[in-house]
Amino acid sequence: MKEFTYQTNGTCARVIHFEKDDENRVYNISFEGGCNGNLKAIAKLCEGMKAEEISAKLAGNLCGNKGTSCADQLAKAVME
Image (cartoon, rainbow, N blue to C red; front, side, top):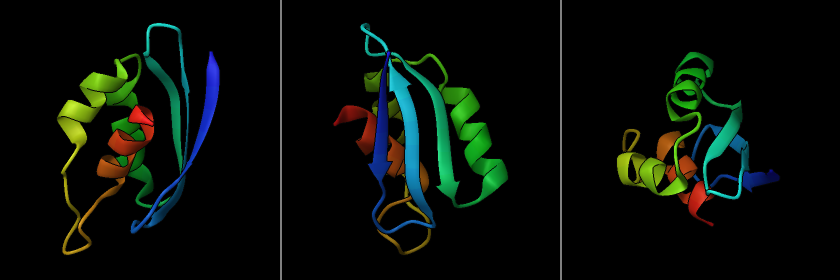
């Protein structure tokens, strides 16, 4: 598995860490900063999903008037 660190933009969470395997499945998602309980739930729900599935479900999800969210940033992170 390959480890990734993604610097977020426009969210309370500053960094997202995760791993991807050869099948593009995402594991061990963790966030630095942000709403701890909600982000732990997102990480558990996305565990083992393909990057494309995560992106399809979470991309465009907004937090207030920020124009993005931690979930939206995760969608972007796993597709890079």
